[in-house]
Length: 310
Image (cartoon, rainbow, N blue to C red):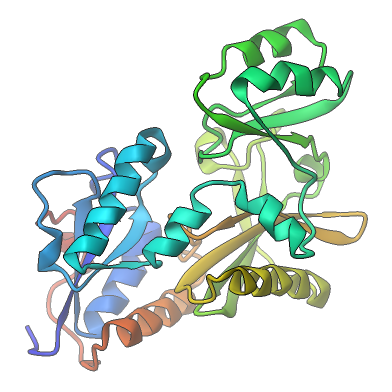
């Protein structure tokens, strides 16, 4: 190993001990830049995080199910002086979708959003008779505890009553454009646009995630869409979170206007598999953050690293 090599923990969840193919090119590109990536489960008590120069958040796709533990883990990384990518302050802010309301106050176009605790949901919905809505936890991911249906429908109303009580929920109008036209994801690395995909749900569904049969295809966004996404990122900077290594801007075009659905700054699927150059761009930026100057090829493939544990 080069003396200038850096050790980078690649944080994942216990259910994903081996990273998927989409991240393989990134790990290979990191190796070429003198960075040693090691896959670690974020809530594994046996991991010594001080062995690493930084922790890159990747497939920690269960953090919202263990939210207090996740926040405690970030606190420990801070106390131990271990940098997280993205920064821990940004991760905390982005982990709770109340941030959408903050973006709206900064002039960002979002899907109209109301927030209520579980006990207040029935009263909020009672003021929205016959409306087709989507309800999701403010801290969530992957359509976890997400409902869609018509207010007043008996089955839907019963599902609402079964939602976990100790959570806040977003209530948004159902956006048919997601089913008809698709949901956009724009990827930015170090504040620069990298690539984009359009995601569509399987027939008869509204969820665009791959585990529900959704698909994603490369696409080139219009200048107006890019401008709207970058306006949202400028608002994030104005709020106090201007420095990010990566962000996925998710949105939908309604009546010709790009509206933000989410800003994914914790553990987004980056759609690197269809964009090999994007993996190189992200790896180059991560190497700059870590101060690694060794650009020489390294022996050993990413396949071994994908399954590595500390």
